[in-house]
Image (cartoon, rainbow over all chains, first blue to last red; front, side, top):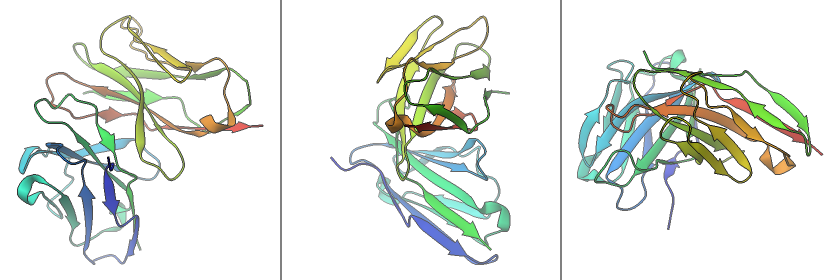
Amino acid sequence: EAGVTQFPSHSVIEKGQTVTLRCDPISGHDNLYWYRRVMGKEIKFLLHFVKESKQDESGMPNNRFLAERTGGTYSTLKVQPAELEDSGVYFCASSQGGTPRGEQYFGPGTRLTVT
Amino acid sequence: GNSVTQMEGPVTLSEEAFLTINCTYTATGYPSLFWYVQYPGEGLQLLLKATKADDKGSNKGFEATYRKETTSFHLEKGSVQVSDSAVYFCALRRGNQGGKLIFGQGTELSVKP
């Protein structure tokens, strides 16, 4: 069974540009989470999807970030326009449906560098 | 608010040394507690967990005990190996906040032969 995959693994963009990160969860997992680790600090929660619905987006830093999960399968996280402080590693995780308390399986992350 | 504090790294040990990584938390109620590990080039993996006070989680020789009185969940291993070199994250999850995990800043462990 394939794990959680993320694309790209690394992205370098200039300030003001747009970047879209993609996450493919484990097949059949209804819950999908986005997290971010900035500058070696703690990993912070961004948002939680249940199928295609946003269950909790309390961690989204501002309106430059847009997350979607059309059809309840893969998810994208768009940053537009990117700022220097958006640099970090973006992790995606998924867990089985029925309860949000199932084990979360993480992808390898996307390292975003904004110059 | 809810938070997790870990000892700062990096931690460098010789093979077969004893490992302790301290983790304390702040949360109301009775959160579930976790240790995740990130090996180089890989995603986070759940290492162990405990869901109530005095529970001991264990896996791959690692152990951690949920101490409500000291709000701690320290990670220990009696004899580390080079293959244990990784970044370790302590995390909590509140029962009434869905699946959201709250992480500490991570502790990098390097084990030398």
